[in-house]
Amino acid sequence: MVPLSRVTPATVDVLNALLNGEAPIWGLLVVKQTSRPAGSVYPILERLEGSGWVTSEWEDDSERTGPRRRLYELTSDGAAAAREIVATAESRSRARVARVVAAPNGIAAGAS
Image (cartoon, one colour):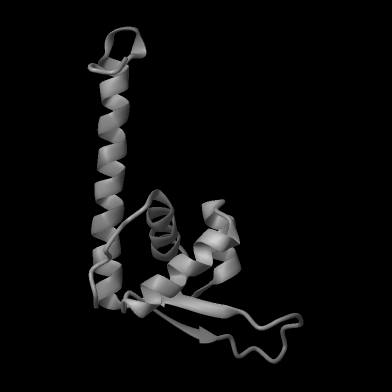
């Protein structure tokens, strides 16, 4: 598994959807759960798969009508790393909120 070179808020959202969804999860459901555009989600899924964080396969459901769905699932190492990234992002978000709440007049110290 290759470490991610950058982790954007959209990447955190995709990782969180993969962690919280029933595995495996199809791409459009990740789009819906993250409220991110498909043009952002699918490249992230592709990057995660290329880095060894995620595996994917085409759904094999002959009873389902409509186009086939690509199913994505975190690898065991990918899931462990994703949990760390999501936890770090949530911790940073809570710290930002706490700084804004604690600042006089709701303005963070040092902000102009």
